[in-house]
View 1: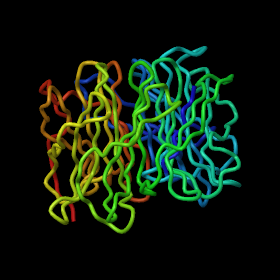
View 2: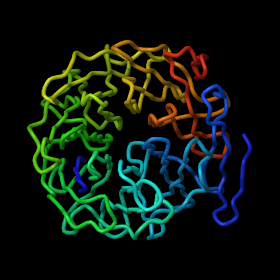
View 3: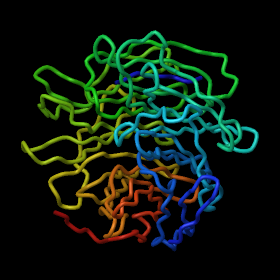
View 4: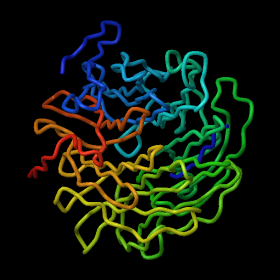
Length: 415
């Protein structure tokens, strides 16, 4: 079932795709190697990352001229990432950015030769739409994409997010700007012969348009959708709506924290959510404090109705931190990543304690918009990596900050 929520290093050349890829050592004791993955001659950015056991899936966009396509690569059992495969069957139909990357999701069950895969992206060919492509064989082949947004919808839609639940159902969120700014929901199957569909149904109006959306699936049909909401006085705080019936209905939105960020415009910087093995919701988001300093905050909830008081995530020392993403492990750790002055930073949370922040990229790379996932053999982080005129997706395996093995402890400022 797919739920759709409308809110609003050595380089290896692969001749068939002109792919730029890099080998890397998966063992945790070898932390200094970063893979650079992309399609040569294109602008590679906007990564999404998810894992099931030791199967790690990466999606991103690669642009040349005005043509943007969606690509996919996978690492199996700690191996280097495969050469990328193009996902979209209509050339150039992807519309993407740092706050609206293509979203990859995996089923917990197996397809024919690996987990079932689905990738969701915003399209601008013809009518504005949210598109989805499925694979039953671990991403080796993708079925022709379909639109999951209603064909009769007016206005613009984008900023999708996606998650898969434990039953093998897929859930997607996006922003819809037809007749106002709305959050909407729908369900269908993750399998390639989907036959069940629920929705679409509007969840909330008055959403902040252009900030990323987020969704996470918990146990027993629980879903958490998060977005930046427009409250009275142009205050743009984070809201969460919970579904307890796999997306058929949603409860009234709850304000996570009264931050009071008043801005007459979209911050282009939304929330991120993850659910751990106990069913606890973890949420990270950016907001402005003291009138000018932008920071990252963190809270948790057991039921989606009440949240712990916000806690500021320790940073690298600047006054501008942005674009957080979050991941939860099976052993109780939570990773929060963000970009800060063109560095990618990481903090882990365990038993309510923050680790020291660390920097993951090198001094020669401009790094932005990180994403993270816990695989069975450790944390994997990806980000936009630019060196001069070359843009790639940087991918790195990271030792736990709580085990004494921090990846890089430098913290540098940039002008």
